[in-house]
Length: 422
Image (cartoon, rainbow, N blue to C red):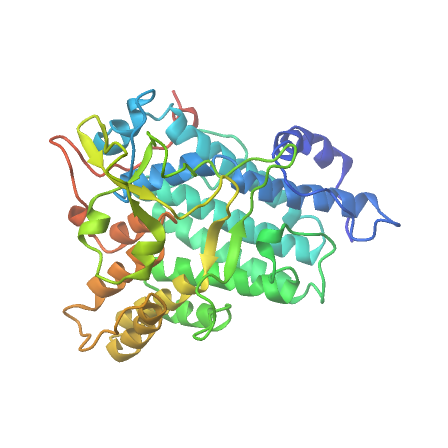
């Protein structure tokens, strides 16, 4: 195993100190009786990267949900959630932009070092985390792109959306290659959120699941088909099977930042009313995700926005947040089939998901209805996972998202002002 040089170690100490205070995993060595400097360093970096991916999770999700009109965040103490995010423009120097950007680029810095560690498993995980962090940044900035230079030079050009997507795909391909040569076991531990994906071969299935998501967003149906075949997709498997961000009440850990008790007199995070209007009768996904507030509780109204729908997707502040699940993979495969004009296969995959939700299957799926159908399924299957806005942008359908007030708009997040010269 190649050691990380002293110079690099000194450079990353400030990053590690920032990450480790939010980590939930003890820094256990693979062999606690014979620890080495190398394994300790790699473990710290992996733990730090995972912790970094959880940092600002609440802000990131609220950003995506409010802009994608899945939710309102009715916070009288901070009207930016009902103004900037729903009318624009979004402040390039405000926390709604800066906090997720900074958290993800800190993960990238850790991941870059893992990629140079000489440990194939660590490199594969690092490149996968790097790609995922870039994906989350681009999910906010969209056509505004992102930085692919990591040296702090703000005079370098910001990469375009297509360039960033290509880089994400390349990182995942390289990570998958590293994982194939990493042997039977990692030299480090991952959190419980990666239970079932904690060996190189199993983690490669997670890597390929992310690769399929990116390929679909690129309309690269061939690459998506290959990646799905190498992922953990399972027609007969549990819809919830997948990788997650895990949270806990342990010292130095954090919560997911999204949970509020639906029975409270006042809650800030409310489901957009259109989610109820557009739901099908008997859809178990709607029933599991939403509670209509009891008449004894106030309908939440703020800044001209009203909802009586409380999210019940989480039951505590420490419930996990999905990264990617089997249910999404089945619907990605349906998207691929639609892209290839194979509507029978798309219908079959959508009907697997619908059956799990307690709904009758579709029939007569064709070019006139297939896309709307798969977007409907993704809307209800991936509720509050941050995918709705990405999907509607991808297919040029942001004009179909509801605008509740005069002056409302669908916004795109800017590149932070600290990344722009002058």
